[in-house]
Length: 180
Image 1 (tube, rainbow, N blue to C red):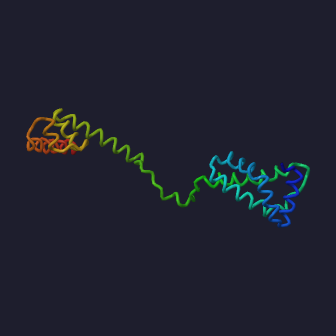
Image 2 (image 1 turned 60 degrees about the horizontal axis):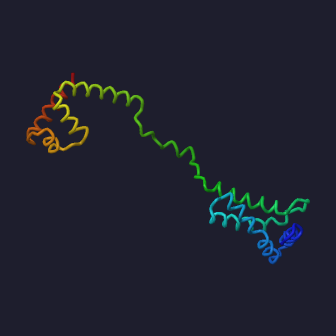
């Protein structure tokens, strides 16, 4: 088992560029530091990447470690935790520049267009109400529900040409009603 003093000595030797000390430091601390990464990231692959980046950081910053009576593990865990948090921040979707957002149009109609459509809808409904119920139902089926003339002829039990005549006459009556 490695003591606090052993870990401090390894960090000081790493600061001098000792690769063997770095390997020993890795062997002594990597399991605990990997646990920190895994707990924060909750993803094994990302935790491994964060641990690798943390040890690169430890190699580069080992000369900044100062023995202050606290556990050297605190310093190592802090560097590792920060790398794991950086990974979480990198997961978030990048924000878009506000200048690019001006091109996004609202797909919904404007209030004015919605009011006009509502008014037109009321006029059409009123004109449909003036038709016989059978004819109004056939018009709704053909032009609102997308039913074919053949489907409507079958539903209303009339010949196909009769259905075409019904729809043609109904549309003429609707046009006359809407033009008033």
